[in-house]
Length: 224
Image (tube, rainbow, N blue to C red; front, side):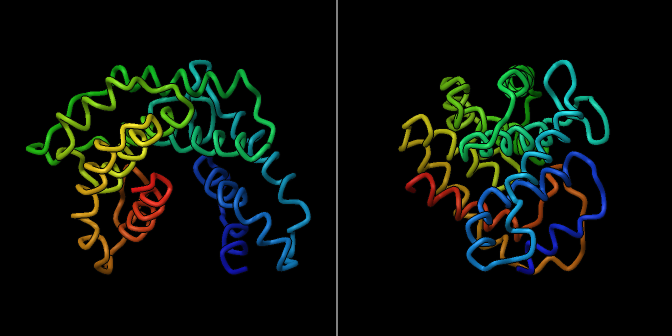
């Protein structure tokens, strides 16, 4: 109940917050109804409204702006497309043309993603997320997944990015490489359990607590 109430108190209406409010509702639907929580009877309608609001910020090339149609933030594009993908899987209506355009945008950005390496403090957070979303929809190139696992596996800045690449590989049935990526991520999980004393800005909107929970969830989902 507290989580649902906190989601309803999100103060702004940017694309990221609309998505952050709506995505958990895909999975809280049955819980909310069973607990007879306030607003549980219209969760489907709220998800439908969120999809409509999000799509008003989709640009012609398929990406999403925070406050208006735009592009340029690969992590945000991956996050929104992740939500739309999960909503479709749960049976919620998502316009096919808009969804395919979002996938095309992710593919284009992946194809032109800048290089990164461990000596420059790593990177690849948004790239790994985009690859995971694409792989779930069967829209990733297996060659890309294997390249990033074999050549760049240790260069990702976050353990979550490594786990997301592992999940992408598991989606395509490459369990040995998936397991290897999750072992890399697992070796860094203890570093995530330390309390974060200050709030920091991250391009992937994350915290150590979020990352640790996500890695465990992805590992279970990927049978690792």
